[in-house]
Length: 338
Image 1 (cartoon, rainbow, N blue to C red):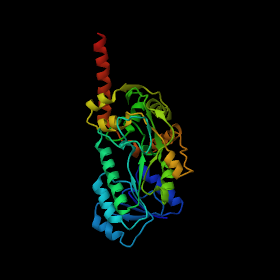
Image 2: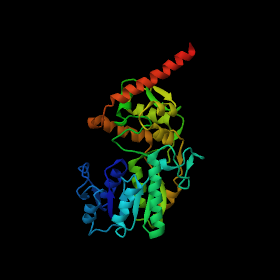
Image 3: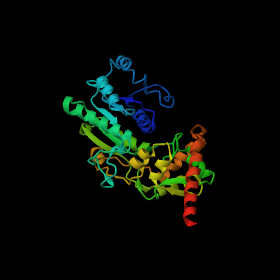
Image 4: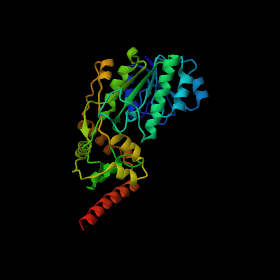
C-alpha cells in the first residue's frame, strides 16, 4: 500500500507510522522534518511545509497514492488545499477529526457516530465540524473518497494525559505529585472518560486504510475502557510511586479563574461523561481490540518521561496558579465557617 501522511510524527500518527514501517508499507511523510530522526530508513521523507501549496504540488507531481491522511488539519481552508492537491491522486483521503466535536452538553453519555455534532464551547471543535462538513460535501458532489476518523483522548510515552494542566504540558502536575503537593481535578472526579494508547489507535486506523467499506464514513477509534477522572489521577500517582492529594474544583470555576481555554477543553470536552460505542469500527475492522489498559500504559509513559528529562518541562506559572486556586477555595470555606 502506497501511503502519504501529512505530519506523521505526532502523538496519534507516530504509532501508525512506526507500525506501517514494520509492515513494509511504502510510506511517505510530508512534513517540515523537525521530528523525523526516530523513524526507520524505509520511511520516505518529503520535507516541505504543506502550506506551500505550489511547492508541494511540484513535489508530488509524479506520485499517486492508495491512501493520503492529514493529521494536522484544523480549519476548512486547509482541507480545501488538500482537495486541490490530492483530488485524483489518491484512492482514499483520511481526515483526523475529534470526538470533542460531539454534542455538548450530551443528551446521552453513550457516543456513537450518529451522535449530533455541536460544541458551542470550543472553537477548535467547531472548526473540526466545519472540516467534516466540507469533506462530506466533496464526497457527495465530486466523489472525493474520504474517511473521517474521530479520536478521543489519545496518549503516548511522551506526555501524561490529564484534564487540568498548563501551557507547557502535563509535567508540572506530575512534579506536584512527586513534591507531595495537592493537584487539581476538575469537578468531583467521578465523570467518565476514555483514554486510548496510541498503539491501540494505530491498529484501528490501519484497519480502515484501503478499506472500501470505510469510504464516505465517519468512525470513532477509542479504547473500550471507561475510567473516572479520580481513577485516572490515582493511576498516575501510583505510577509515580506517590500518594495522590486531590483537590476537586468545579470546571466553571477553573474556566473563570484561568487564561487557559478551560471553557473549551473542560466544559466543551473533558468535564462531560463520555462512553464510546466502537461497534462501527469493529464491524469495519473485525480484529480490532484495544489491549493497553490505562494503569499499564501510564506506567510506561511515566517511566519514559522520568528517563528523558527533555520531556520534563517546568511550568512555574501554572504551579503558582494551582496554589492560588487551592488557597482561594480554602479561604472561601474558612470564611463561610466563621
